[in-house]
Length: 339
Image (tube, rainbow, N blue to C red; front, top):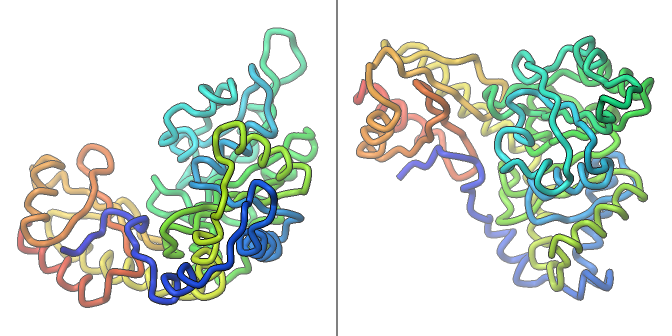
């Protein structure tokens, strides 16, 4: 079965499995797991931040940032289809007690002037704007890259208002590789950033939250409050080190696979693209087939390909390490057959 549902489905590589087997571990709650410590130091250095914290998931990393920067009753500015708003179970409200101020972006990028206008003025009727959240790459826009210019403009708006900026950078390394930039070209425009190890970077579990030492100290305490105190987690960190040192540059291969898939889909009558992929996510419009999402996905599954529904009349195909170019060609053949 060719599984294009998500890049979270990657299996750990042989090097990762060996590193996990050989990892030196300790109790991370005591700060004594050397492999965790090494991963966090590596991540902080790569992301250009003072400190970093290993967390169980991207959602946990995002929520720790919100909890650290905000107080109950505050408001945070988010893009209308951002992961933190769309896919995290209302956690910003359930856990931090904050409400979202939603701005509709273009391919995930918010207009800096709209962000500026959304910041609350001093008035007892209004909540305090305590955080601005960006997402890069932007999942629901098909892995779109938000430009460093856009991020810089929003960061400058935030600085003038003394409001911190958090980047949900679950696939930020995809953006850096695809745009031929350093990841710090992006992270210079934020106060905290979350990056995921278990998507295109291939680790079985985990994300990292990075920022200033005081930000990470708060996040560590919130992680503990939420039951996230880790013990011999160095087994997971060992894989994460491989992700950061050996799996970043190869993300270009996933982008090549996505482009190959997109090129073929443009030539299949009855299918169209939501937009050309910037990275590893291809969103396909299937409305002209007159099939429901469920029918289309069932037909595709019978041909040996898995994908996911992504809104009415749309499906998502995501390339990753465990999908070869030959698999992509087979997926293209399957799409042609069922259409």
